[in-house]
Length: 136
Image 1: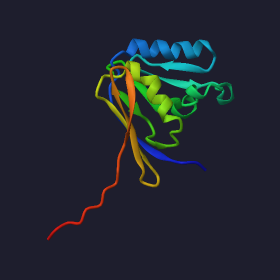
Image 2: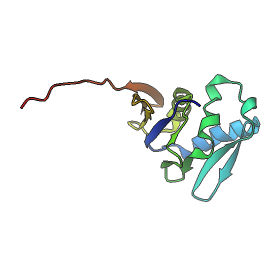
Image 3: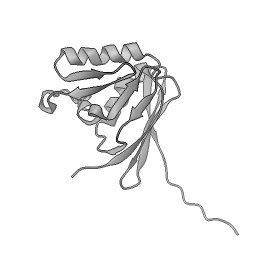
Image 4: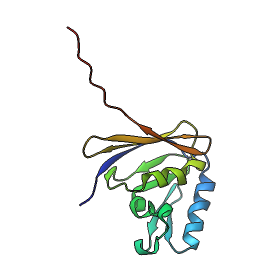
């Protein structure tokens, strides 16, 4: 059960070292483990029940799904999944993302929303469905 959505990653990490350090702080708290290769890292959640801070509950949903590459790219292993707390994910990533990048979601019911990153902050973006008759 739950609401599934597709995520579209249209941003790059501008401050890879800063993002890695932010995740390392969460690792020190015992919430996650960082898994590294020489080209990328992702997180492994140790115990979902330990993540009691609502601002960090997005960790339970990104798990091994997002890979952060040294070159600044971000890849999603499984883009159609349950992406709860996406607003907190956007807030967490915002200080490290290049300005102008976006992260979009399309829900299983067709709803569309996302976030745009500017100057270290995340801004909510909503799409409005508009129906216009086509003229002959």
